[in-house]
Every structure is written in structure tokens, then in C-alpha cells.
Length: 170
Length: 246
Image (cartoon, rainbow over all chains, first blue to last red; front, side):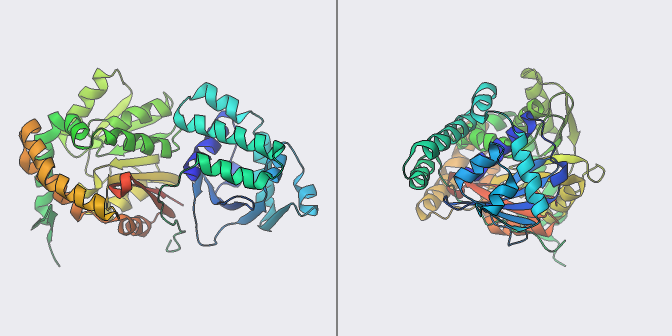
């Protein structure tokens, strides 16, 4: 379910933030938060993002970082600085990673606020709660990583989902 | 070469299936929505909502709803694409398409195009649509592989195919309940409400003959899609397959 929520959130933000995804077209980005059970692949295509599970190591770039660093990127932290400090690990096409970071930083809006104003459906409400909660506990908790795990577990329920894989036949 | 296919549990000549399926839907068209509500306890509306939410359809998109019947999905897609987009509601069955047109008119939904078509021969140019949906329709298509190849052809690169269909549950308990319900209760309800036991017997049988989740995923990939994944709904009684054209 978290993939579904994430996909909804990203595409909502892209559409409402008027973000141009063209530079990332046809790119596959594997994104992992080291301190969370979150490893997803973003397939950027047709000016939208599909969040899928496992595509058999065919991503253009793998990005590994912690939740705190993720939010630092949102706040405009420089990717190069984070790379120098080993706070973010990138394998593959760094240019693609930079394009993704540029896009994230271009999303200069309060996700929770926007979502609650415009949609009001269950998904938007949950996204708002999740993002708010994550921000709050990473700031306040003495052990943010464990607290984050507990918190996200409470919010997200996993339905069964297939493995997704890249079709290499074509 | 074997020129037979299945129609429920019966083996029939391939060229006869389309007419037999048409007979089923001619018979149930006027009671289709009511029967869906009764038989699924209203769950079909939730499954369709999830399908719409998963589509990533946005303003200006072109969407084709195949086997769209009474237009549940087309109505929601129309709201999403806005006036700058396009939604085509299609069905092979004229009676179902007529019900769809009536339903949309009654709900004040305009700007949807209606096309009667066979999913195996889609009358559109290559790379036309951002999204194609087919809800509870694929199992009635005679040559599913051909239909999937056609859907792939007319989707734009990056376009999304959504297949909402009955599928296979892993839960033994659910399986037993579902079998009993499908073969004993559903045809009875069909007889009482729609005065048509046979069509609902066919419904139960056709669900059992439909490919399971993994098989359908392989078929989608084989048709040329770059990615495919599925999400089980209601314990796998229904599955949503999502294919992306690379």
C-alpha cells in the first residue's frame, strides 16, 4: 500500500507543482531509505512516475540515504555536499540522481496542506498524516529511526503485491 | 490446430464464443449494475475506485475504457481528464453500450465518446492513449493475447494498461466459501433478480477459466509491456494488473 500512496503523492505533487519530468523520461531510479523498510523503483515516463517493486537490477541509478537526509534534500541541501559527507550513496548515473534531486527541490509546496485542501479523500489524508508524522518524529525523537519505523508501520498496511520485473524480451 | 475455446466450462468453436458472450450480456444488460451491487455486496465500486486511483490519469489525457459497459470507470476518467482530455467508452455489446450511454446521460456526464468495438481489433492508430482500462471484460475475450497486443500497440510509450478482473485466491477458507457462493448462490440470485440463471452460471464458470495472477502478468509482458505488476483485492478474488508500455 505504501507504494500506492507514494505514487499518488508524487504524481499529485508533480501535477500541482507543475514539474517537468521530461529530463527524467524513461529513467528508472531505485530509491532506498536505509533506516526504513522502503526500497522502491521509480519509473519516470509519460511525464508521470510509476512506483514499482523490483525490476531485476535494471535501474539507471541507485540512491541510498536516510529519512533525515531525504528531508534535507527537500529543504534544498546540496547533493554534492551530502555525497562528500557520505550521507547519500549513489550508484550509476549521477546526472539522473541530480535531476531527481532538482525535481524534489522544485516541489516547493507543503504536501500536507495542499493535499488536504484539494482532495480530502482517504489517500490524501493518509499521505498528509504520514508526511507530518515523519517530519515531527525525525525532529523530536531521541531515537528517530525506531520511532519512524513504528510510526510508518502503524499507518501503512501491505496488500499482497507481485514482483515486478523489467521485460527484457522487447 | 485446435479451433475450440472455452465458454465457461464448455468447449465451443472459437468463432462461436463471441456470439455466445454477446447473448449473455444482451440478457443481463438492463440489470447489470444492480446485479453487480448485489453479487459483490457493493465491493465492485471499491475495486473500481482503486483502479481509477491507480491509473495516474491526469488532465488532458486520452483514455480508452474497453468493455466499459455501464460506464462506471468512464465517468470517473472523464472527471480526471477534464475538457482538454478524451475518454472513449467502448464495448463489443450494443446493449451494454446503450446502457452506458443512458447511465452517463442520467448522471449528467457529457463529453464521453462511445465506440462499439472488439478488443482484438482496436480501430485506433499506434501510440494514441495514455491509459487503457478493461474491467471484468478480459475473461470474455476469445483471444486474450491478441487483445493485449492491440492494447499495447495503441498505448503511448509510458502509457498504462489497467486490467481489473476476477482472479484466484490463495486462502483455502475463502476459496471454499467463494466456490459455494459462485456455483450455488450467484446463479440463484441471477434467476431471482434478473430472471437469468444461465448467464450467472456462465459468470462463475468463466471466472474459474480465467488465467491466474501470475499467468496473466506473463501474458501482459509477452504482449510487449515493459513492466507489469498486480495487486490482489479482497484476498485475490479480484486482481488489478497494471502494465506500463516502455
